[in-house]
Image (cartoon, rainbow, N blue to C red; front, side):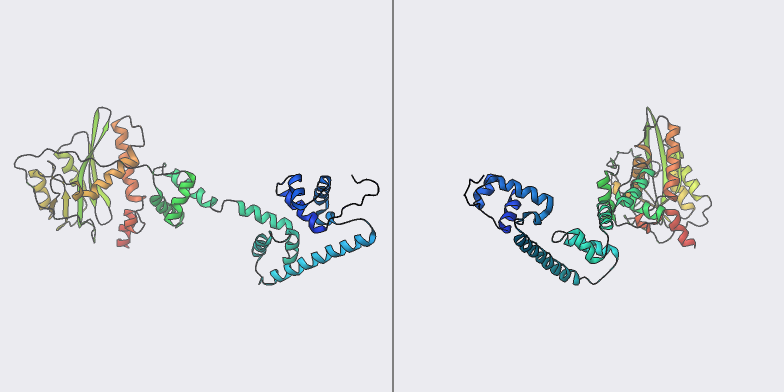
Length: 383
């Protein structure tokens, strides 16, 4: 406090403003005073309080009408200058919808007050803050909900590529696969990993007939009943085994016939082919590919196929990749229909296999089939 007769020190508006800014940046009163040469620390407290109450106008000298008039005039001139700059900036704005005006306010809010900006472009402050709330919302919320719904509908089994196909099939939505992957990762969804195929050694009978690999890994066909692949797989339920024989048409990847049994014998395979040939008018010239398992090298098998005009093809011994298309189907079947569930009986396994094969043929789209199911792809040919 000044003593009687002592002249008070005065500080300019710019000095006060600089001191307040330094305090707001976190500097102590002593640091600000040392930096700017301010003797009375209490003044810093007063300046800061007035600034919070009245803004910059609170830092102006209020002693004497003439001085007050001078400082108010200077403050008004500063506002007029900022207004002129604002108009010049907004003048480059060529118009647009309300959302574009909100975007402009958002871009310039660091240089001008929101109130002045909203007034200049002709929008309300409340509308601008509603716009901010919408901006903060998750733009992908709807897509995430659709992906979650699709993922759950198919028992949480599939990865992003198959989910992409289901989105297109079930909802008519074609979403970029990278976006599906990103959103699934954000939600925490992942595919059930297929187990690696383990090739099991088979027994070979002396004198069995083996033919060359006519298919030669060319797993495409131009028409139905041109190329079939077949094999037998097994699934264990407790101490029991269930064997599945299936035939796949390489034209549309459909399962044309299958048969299940608790015995892995020749009758299992022959019954499967009887089902496949039933209702087929002409299969002459068709290639039927299998491995060299004992059923496929048997005399009855080699007698049956030539009678209908089919040509037998076999994988090389011990080379499972020569019949990779059939192995792929069995892998999908077990991963999607058997492994995720605690199956307690052979009958339950049979029901799940039957349901899956119907789903696979009629409801499961495939990328190789132009995003169609096997049934849809074949119906295109008929149409």
